[in-house]
Length: 192
Length: 192
Image (cartoon, rainbow over all chains, first blue to last red; front, side, top):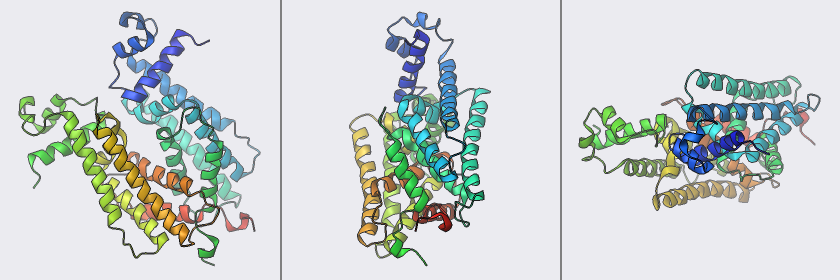
């Protein structure tokens, strides 16, 4: 069973996602928790502390999902599974993913810099997936891998805006992967 | 020369993008304009009215950029030019694009519904571009065109987070287009 603290983090995710960090007050959080504002302070020091907790947990979830992609899968298969993993995290916790993707910029320093470093590390892991695939000859030699990573992470990041909470996203991830892999062009119109 | 009203809309775009709509007060806007708060009311009735102006102008810019794509270009060429057009609008006015993409949800009704309808119309124009290409045999027959539109618009929408204001984006748009068109897979690893 969720502790009151866990409930508060979950409620804060939902309100920050709906109204924005600055659009949510401690009074709003207290009301959503059904307590007096004063009682909230036994669960958190501040709204900022909740934002830190949500974004840290978000980063941990995205990294953990990537960790679960087997090292010994083929390089293209690993990309497919990584895309499933990312969309799966968003679908499992759309509010937290929204706060992670959109409200992180309201973190105070030094947490803001720490967040950006974690996000860069995540992007770097994606670049590594592509690099590995390129080294193993699975990608076309004229590919701009940087643009490919940007394209796939854009799709992954934007997902918080349209994914239905709790939706099964593996099939859609695979459809994205198929387009990323082979493109939209008809074979008849491909240059020889 | 920009009128004071145009200056205010531009200043509001920048502050709403930096601090969020709810993180920006009329006092902040007055300070950034170098006037007393009371004087602002000769230029706008409210913060909300400014949000309406910014999102309406944004929608008009995105539609106008698509309008400029020639009807008689080939169906794939039209998609390439549409992607250039979209990223060009974002680069030309990153703050306004940020507000358009992220802060629109703080519009009051009925503007919020009007905004969503405009956005759907824009997405529908993109779907139409893909549909046209499919009908003319330019896309592979097993393509999930809905997923393709979602992928390309995700990349386009997420662009406000990484595009450098005023940057030349045509080359990057073309790199995205190339990946969208032919995928990342090496010819050697393509199934026969």
